[in-house]
Length: 116
Length: 112
Image (cartoon, rainbow over the protein chains, first blue to last red):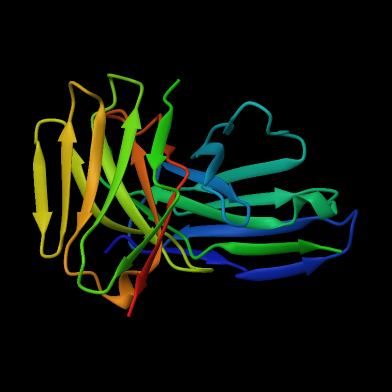
């Protein structure tokens, strides 16, 4: 159990357009999902914490108006990169925790975004 | 907030040798410490974890030790194989998982 699906796995978009990335927990309910960004050869940097039914909590330095997060159900969180720029090109990956308590996080398969 | 450091950043070992990766953390409230393995272009996979009430945990060729007093924990891989080559991330988290911080990663290369 504890499978997290993320799509698309890769996307290429033009500067100025918006891209939506979906993260779904397939076999469990996730009240909290996390969005990370990973640049080449670097660690995962938390962007925001997505809470079902409420506003996301953004990390310092992450523009909430640029990276829109919606967690409308217990199994789906979406990240929309608005007005994308080449510097937004990165590997975006979500994760979810199966339940409260000390469980390992399950990661989605990641989305490689390239803005041209 | 929590700060997790990880060493070394790169590690090359001969097949069959052991590999050790060390992490330190700053927040004494952290009490959950997972290790993830990430192959190129793929998602991180949890390989082992340890909680603060345990000093050591072993799963086949992989073991993790925790020194809560010194705030450091280590990953030990014995009898390394080429398929162990990947980037390994340690992380530290508080009990509720609201403060989950990754280390910078260690690129392990197992040479045949």
